[in-house]
Length: 501
Image (cartoon, rainbow, N blue to C red):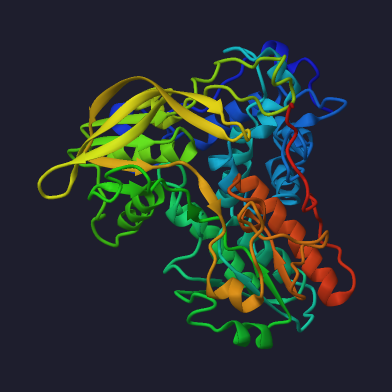
């Protein structure tokens, strides 16, 4: 069993980051490289802090990890130096732990019992760091090989979209013996893992090694084909026995009502991130660059932070991030957000530590342009959130207007749901009021044989939820095709994280 007093004599220690002055000069991951021995020793010590609680909230689907990762088990295996066994337990619930160990915000850690005393020396087990180390060591030792199906069912399955949900569903279904083809409209595989998340958070070689494993297992990939356009829906349905829609929730929220929105230099955040990632892939200079510009990011979430880190590396003169909400507290308020629910607190990403200014309770009123039609500044106003008579949220200006220099403005204000068009029209599907696709308890949509998972079903969410939904939908597909399934399913289509109301 775990060391029940480990947390008393071992302080919490996060992975060390490279100096800001160094890391903003390249696109490599922000953490300091470590020798294999030093990493194994430090991570083993951190794993010894896990108490193996009587009720491990860290892998509770409602408050911790929706994948149901067996965290206390692999923590104890790491503590005892059994890295190979830890990797086996980790892969039992997570198809891509080397990805989630890098990009997940780790709801498992805020649900850890030790987070009840979260200080600089105590606090939650560093679960995310341990997870990444287990996965990376397994890859380095050559222990992550293909898992070949024991038999072939002869059934053909199409997966539309190669993000984390689609890849998880594809890998599970391939291993169950089905012939799986993944269709991706971009020129490379990975969805937002490839083109949405910057390389300083996820180097693409990490993704490529997993895709190589999937190819050997038998999954077939087709890029630069948009289903419903290059591949007609009628051809898709006649060829395949089942279809999984994992198209994401890429319909970005915009604000076309702002005066000056159509000026050159005002873009959606994802346009900036996608172009930057293409440049990092060697596709030529990005047409949307922050070099030598005053950058303003509208929106305070993770996408905005990704734009912030990208702007630093592109050589921005200044970066300001705007949020119309009040600044969040730095510590959990037990009255309004009790443990183990995910706490709404102020989080500082590595990108924020690299520079830039965050301004709260402000909103853009209009953009001002120069004679050539390029944005040169924006007018802000202090605002307060309120409600109208119908209870709808209103952003009400309350202060004087402020002019802020701005050569590049990026809207990072969220997403409205999955994209509509020929694919959904051809399948006879409509989005619901949340802009996503509904399904039954078996993950099947209103069109027989067509399933949905990930952000296309849930809305923009975390990578761990996408993988969990992809794995669970794969079980639904397997049951549909064969009448039964031994594939695991960690979440139900209606599952929601624990929140305080």
